[in-house]
Image 1: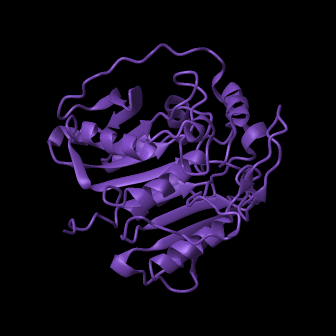
Image 2: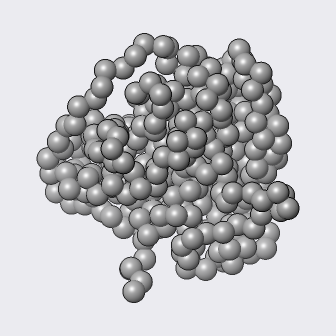
Length: 342
């Protein structure tokens, strides 16, 4: 979601403390390793880093899918990895998880992504994060067994926005996306056009699964000004998540309206008993794409299925009404990049 530098500072202080990180050093990843690694590359004169989790299945030598998982504004890869808990699923399902780090004024803290009209340092400095992802994928493929037709992107908040930017500007590399609690902030608005048309530089219809709570007080589901972040007076304006999905559905020539595919409620007797999740599906999209919305209630600005007790004062109530990791992986498995077009 749109964050100013002040907003990023407040979140980082709550989430990660203020200790300065040591400058990371590049680590080579040979073909076929398993376990956890840090990959560092040079891009635009900056040392950029990512945490990489390679499952034991890589020892078989066969190319594996990759999920890029982007942290939120003001966060960093290590804290995000621990919060979303995707590694366990990667080990069971056999895919590589990459947690990239954004950029900021303090090395591996206070980091953001340049998702277009957001966020903070990365936006203000015009960081080429799309270019960084392309270079990162090339570096990973040279060091680990990667199936380049099955690379997917997800992320939380500002990281969700980054996954949308990749869908728009790197659809030749990204097979599908699953943004969580953050919407698209492209293109740049014009003063005479408060509802700018969706422009997608690529021509491909990218499958999308969007996960968002109507009770999210940080990245407002229906758009508008959010509540001030604790310890600040910062309020930011967000796009309407449903309007963004309808624009993508029109671009991808899907059905005009989505159909309800499933509803869930929290388990009785638990802290999330009153939470709900409804799955909407825009079907019939061109190029066999699909657009899915998981519309939640009761949850805050959170990763469903992540740690329930993670920063509730800042993010609101956690939820387990759905497991975002399981749902997006089930979705991702259905899609591969089509053959390159000349």
